[in-house]
Amino acid sequence: MATSPSTSDHSLLRIEHDGAITHVRLNRPAKRNALNDTLVAQLQSTFTNLPAETRVVLLSGEGDHFSAGLDLSELEERNVAEAVMHSRSWHAAFEHIQFGRVPVVAVLHGAVVGGGLELAVAAHVRVAEKSAFYGLPEGQRGIFVGGGGSARIPRLIGAARMADMMLTGHVYDADEGLRIGISQYVVENGQGFAKGLELARKIAANAPLSNFAVLHALPRIAEMGQGEGLFVESLMAAIASGDPAAKDRIRAFLEGRAGKVSKS
Ligand code: 1HE
Image (cartoon, protein in one colour):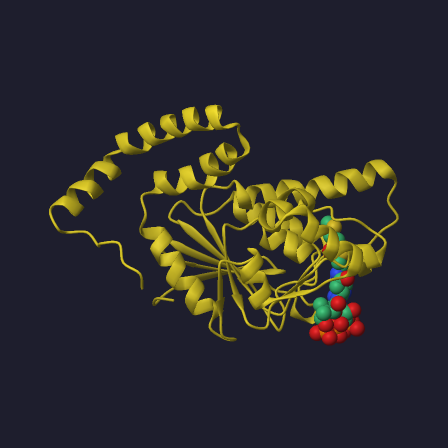
């Protein structure tokens, strides 16, 4: 990243701000970035309080793995009500990632399992290094997903594949994950951050209102019936195209000052 990033330590996260791009790293490598209550709370607070200049977040994990999921060593005896609230606290945190102010690019490597996969699928773009593998060992551990996985993962890969992962312990590797739609990109080991940064810079160069529409209107429209969806699309399109940024960008293209669409 460029010259003088500012770094802050949220103890279980390493956060680096560099202009429009904020890099959030899960920082518990000795525990394979297992997610405990403190880490989930720090994620929520980080995504809720991003600096105004942040336009994209890169999310990754320190060490050899993205995340080993729920911290199994901190599983407490919870009664039913407490267990519901625990799951709801993950939902609240991950909701701030999926439906926050800015797009999130997750860079995945090594284990992306259980709650780690639930976290990854709350991001908008996923770049996987070849080492990445995806599993949902909840079935083997005698529990169920509780971090939004049953709502988000079937929307990416289908309920049947998720059922298979949970029932049989099926693990997908990075290339398979690309094919079935877990990640949008696969790169060589060690190249994930560079690819994520390249994508983050492209995203940061978009008009903020276009990015906002992709984050907030697109997934909601996709859940609507076609008639309602088309109507909401028209409203969102009118709002976006009325923004001065749209007028400036379209003028720039017509005057030959903006990039063309190309496959590269
Ligand atoms: C952990 C955790 C964890 C590692 N909670 N401490 N998640 C799982 O069922 C995945 C369990 N973890 C694993 O399968 C493996 O650890 C990995 C494939 C992720 C990594 O293997 P490896 O060989 O690199 O590391 P390791 O030697 O297994 O683990 C290193 C340390 O991390 C070790 O602790 P140490 O004190 O003995 O050094 C492990 O105990 C610790 N560790 N994973 C706690 N998950 C909201 S609902 C979500 C439900 C779920 O996420 S269920 C899935 C839970």
